[in-house]
Image (cartoon, rainbow, N blue to C red; front, side, top):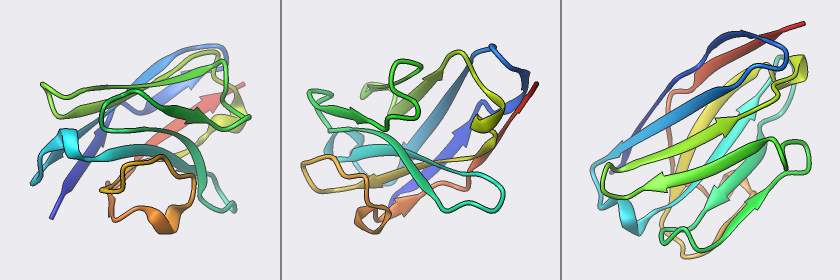
Length: 124
C-alpha cells in the first residue's frame, strides 16, 4: 500500500503562483512513478504531468506546459507541482497519483494510488 497526501492548495488571484506538495508513505518513494491530475467542476479528470522515479523523464499536458513544473525529492518522499501564471480555468481539485511501472503515463487507469486531492481556486 501507498498513502499519498496533497497539500498547498488555496485561493489565489489570476497570475499568482502556488506550489503543491505530495507526501508519500508505505513504499520506497524512489520506486514510484508520480503524476499530477486535476478535475474541475463538471469536467473529467485531466492528466497534467508525470515524472519517473529517477526524475530523468517527464511529460506535460499542453494546457500547462511552460507554466507548471513537476519535481521530486526522494530524500523527502515528496513530489511537487510548481504552478505559475495561474488562470481561472486552472480551478480544480488537484490529485497526486503513483504507479510502479518504470515509465510515464497520462492514463488515469495506469495509476494504482491516489491522494485525497487539494483544492485550487483561481479568481479573475
